[in-house]
Image 1 (tube, rainbow, N blue to C red):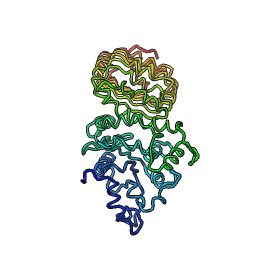
Image 2: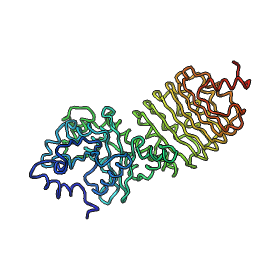
Image 3: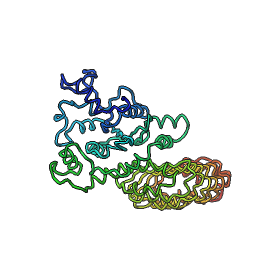
Length: 460
């Protein structure tokens, strides 16, 4: 049955017979011998998954990443010599063909199998060689992207690290946010695989050969390769587990929010536990279920290395309170330099003062981008809370059609007291409660202060 054929079948029936005479890798039987095939993506997967599902995942990956049929993927079954595996796999995993292929690649695509009667979901999380590959995929020294794929029935879906070419192309074509296209593309990722990802534990991976398990765990934990027993706990285990779990927590957030299960699944705590996380995007745009931001603030608690944060609440029609997110912003985010908050169309939001208070507490923040356009109930902007922030240099703020915001004095109280401010982009077109002279775009603070002086609201 071709629908259920896997690599164990293909290896026995095709790869080994085809490569026996020359003792070569299967790829050598197919590729142009005069042309190098340096891998662009490394495939981490389980041999027991259906070949057709594997191919669907790769085809979808090529599509979203904007790759071509000429971009090589490294797949161990086809790249290793199956009649001479001892030459490909040695005691030190970092000397293996797997590690060397990852070193040449720009990213790892981890392919997870769906639940079946006798296996899954996410079998690679229980296989020690896969956990080694995952540990390297999230190792900053390797500088690899990590995409995670699965196939449910005949549909492949992929969680991508960062935005893909498809996301950017769709956003450009529709005049919308690329982050929103990414979130929508990923929201159909199966919940049972996400739940397995929230529990991943690299140190519990199993192997066909006990020596492989020992060598790999010792390699990850930086111990002598043959040390026994292996360590049951180590910071390197924690780092890999936290990184993988947070990837799934972010991917699950939107669906969990819709079903009221964010807290029940422990998503804020999972993300907060990833103290190595440097970039975070949380997108719940266009969700009437979002009324407050407490869970978002909890998710930020332990992120000491976070450098860039993007939170998207646009068109959350029932959002009323920013206390939770504002409370999560503070000195604990000691590395945060860039903050983007999308609030456009949050019609019931009356105050962003808690958000501005939180921003004021961020010690090294250099740039903010707050889009509050069409927040028709926004009265209290709270920008005066930013006064005295010593590192904030670049400020972008969109207040277009905030029709009840009518206190321009908070603008120069806040922006006029930022010693590092070098760039200001401010849109107040359609702020009908403001004097007509203020309803325009500003690209530097001096233009704003000139209008304030001309209106008699600020002394020269």
